[in-house]
Image 1: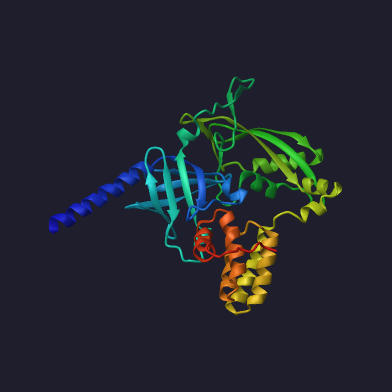
Image 2: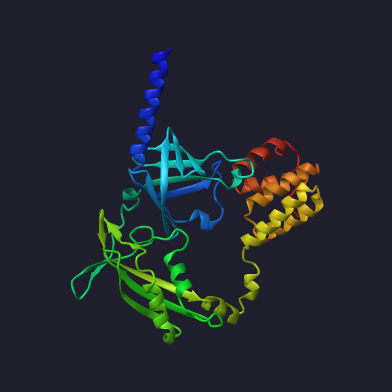
Length: 349
């Protein structure tokens, strides 16, 4: 018995050490889905930039949509811990793939939890050939390419463009459009700032000053494991697109755009009404939530649950069918269980 327990303990330790050794690498997101494998419907989440670099000293670097931060991690058995509150189960970890999914979630969090799949950066970069040019001083400059070759802006809360926009002195009552370029050297310094396009040239100096304010926050781009000089081009839309849209009569089109924040507000109101057993009000709130964001799967689940509580099976099946059509695993399971055998599934009004 003692020998068996000792063997299991040693095997577990070796297993954990193997995971720890294999995870030390730079990983680039290649797929993202919901906890149960259902597809992500929101483009901004599905197409998000996500890159992790795990170091041997239990620290990691993460870049999310141009925002780069650092933290600590731990690998215990087949579990990956980020700090104290974020935990992922390692489903796969080898030389070509890392797949992790959230764990320790309550039932209200499952629909928002993610399964993340990564490949090593060296595989992600296969087939990519960087563009370069030489300066008058014969320095080689690499042209930045999003998610392939780019300097890192070390700020976990803001991307470089957000940081510069916040520090750009430009009156709120005006609308402008600017396009700038600059070089981040292999030492992480900013050089060669140039305003390529501007609707208000008298404000160019303030944009240059804002770009200079990022000094000390850059890490150079790397290529083939070495830091390189890289050219960055960046646009700054200071209300210009909105102004042009108003001029072209874009207000009507704007009414049809998805408003996720307002949709989630009505979803929250519906949850409050459900707790108070005000089911008719909850259904009205959920109808507004879905109208504002037809891809808000939480609103469909919530309305199906309210219809179940009020014993309106036909309408419940309409929402479950909608979730099934959106390839949501839990919605499909529920539709198969409660609705599939019915002679007629109603269409939504």
